[in-house]
Image (cartoon, rainbow, N blue to C red):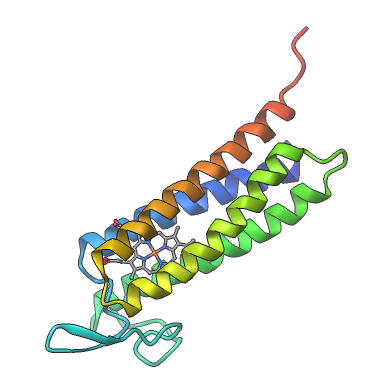
Length: 160
Ligand code: HEM
């Protein structure tokens, strides 16, 4: 298996874990736990900080903040994976054009996704924005699976 294909699979897995962790964050109603709130309303997301700090929140003090912090950390890990994967696949000769294009489009969606994450926390977890955040994550995941499928087909051993 080539490095490019291995990296595409790892990026798909990392995105999957991130999406499931996002669902956990939403289900637990912890989406605002990295911010300052007054009277139940979120007034500051502290983004990219979590309650004014970049250090790991203590779960005994605020479990929700840790869940949100992990979501953000996983999004950084996934972003690095996708960036490296896209560069590696683009440099394969001859270039696997379809997979490379799908990865480039995924990168564009990832930038939108991170920006939407910022809007989610700064809009006091507005339901419509959160739904958009989910919709874009689903499209992002689908595109990566497309890239993975193209890499799989390309590197499949020839049948005689
Ligand atoms: C590649 C990046 C990301 C992906 C794939 C992703 C995906 C998701 C998913 C699938 C959910 C669950 C949505 C739902 O169940 O309705 C979620 C929730 C959430 N995400 Fe992200 N996310 C990403 C980056 C970020 C970033 C950078 C932030 C940062 C500030 C963020 C903030 C949130 C918050 C606050 C929620 C909870 C929303 C709520 O409780 O209503 N996400 N994310």
